[in-house]
Image (cartoon, rainbow, N blue to C red; front, side, top):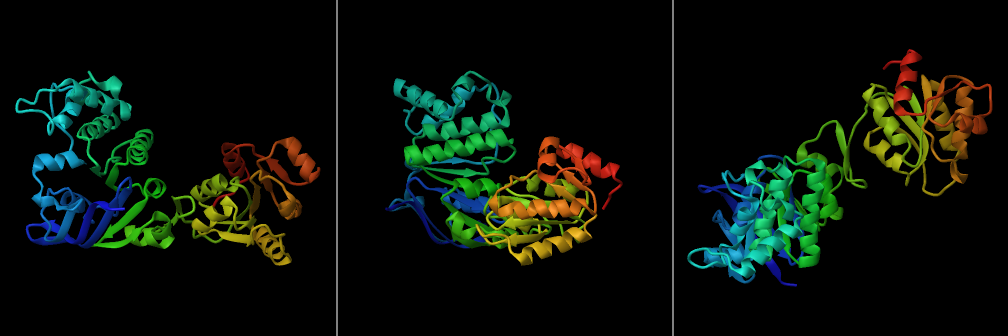
Length: 400
């Protein structure tokens, strides 16, 4: 498949000074390509060079088979649309009028919209879910609504390629998801190629076919997110200290490097909110016995907790039981996160029974379930919610 846009041996910068060097991009039809990197890494400079707004210091940028700087501006705007971070400061202008500016490359000398132009403007607003904003004053719109209008304006140009600089910055999570959803639909359904810069690594991992990691004036790595983005990669890219990127879930977890003071028996994701709560409270944590494919195991590893783990789909070994018992014995208290009980984790119930004979066990199960699993006469304290759990820990006098 031929490239919609291709940059080769590109050095990008200002006034003869290179900001990012050695850029090679091949943007295929329908691809969503994300540039990821810290502030000041040169992402915007790359985008402006790809858009023809800056001349390359060296190397080339081609749209199809043509050098971008050999294409007349009017013709280029029919092939490429650009949405930058700079907002429009236009007074007394409706959202419809902003979107209609995308038809300028197609209108005559007087810029009069014909019926077909008006149809395309309305269709562009409908595609981004902003048709109801048509008569609203542009400056009265929220940031998310403005971003939709700017994307609709770009669509009205009917380009094969759209370049966006931080389209989700300053947006709440609802509008971030909406904007990324729009761009993904445009690529998947309309075959549009999308190149954008983003700070939201988790969204980029889950929405882009191709990523470029930019730092210190160079492209550190590029390729499919699954091949490029990992715990160490993201840590190096952003110089992250005290947090770990989980490539399985595509999210950051705050590390807990304290020696274990509490043992949490989790599983199937029930332990994760407990890990985070107790870490915020200042406790060092250990957890187990978890199978390596359990989501709690992934989160605990990312948080750098002490984890007793077992191979996937294997029975719990004597070594794991012994290691968990040793940590439970040292713990100030133990938490039962209300994990589901199955064939391979009944050992965890036995761990909790033995722990309850020695020290407080706080269980997040309903009382009836506690009695069924553990019987009576054990030191098990009921805490059905995280709020109750925190209250009970404080009432028992435990602190970091």
